[in-house]
Length: 229
Image (cartoon, rainbow, N blue to C red; front, side, top):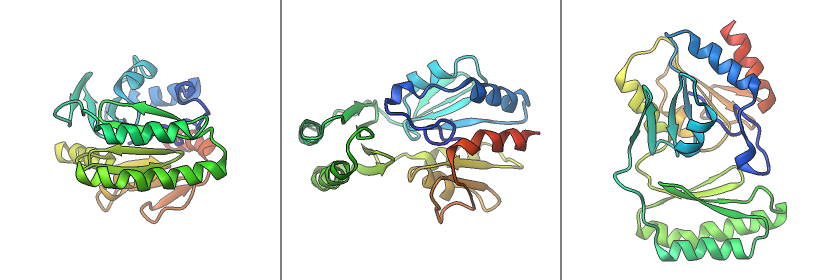
């Protein structure tokens, strides 16, 4: 179970430009060539992007942190219907964007995301705290979850996450070897959902939720190349 941004692919200033490299695509082809392997990209990305970037590969997906999943070529949803966003939340997000140059909002089917990767560090830290504080009231009222991530703040339903997708997969079949890897706080839900014999790997900073650590993203593909040899 593989996170994408910051794990399989480095972060870039424009998220739309984080397309998979040929090196990564070749690695995934090798991993999926053995039909005993089930390879799942468990990502915050939306369905359309995952389908476009990995077209033709025998992969399964979890999109938008488990809100949607794809198996055997077909998408399924864990959300009953597209969320209609509260006016107060939209106003708060738009106000934050107005006073934070180079930030923007992404509207997904199941979440809203404020991106601030290109914002000056001192301003980004201030605005992140202000946004989270402003969202706490309406999020509590509407039973929504605020999820700070790597240069993002996301607001979503608490009913699904990367961990809930792991649990769903493990209920369907038994596996001799289970590995999950990711770089962000959202990936810790995935680590916590693993059985005791599961292998959890954090990319970047140390996480007590993971058994192992790969210090830098650039070492991830070489790690898997060695593993599948």
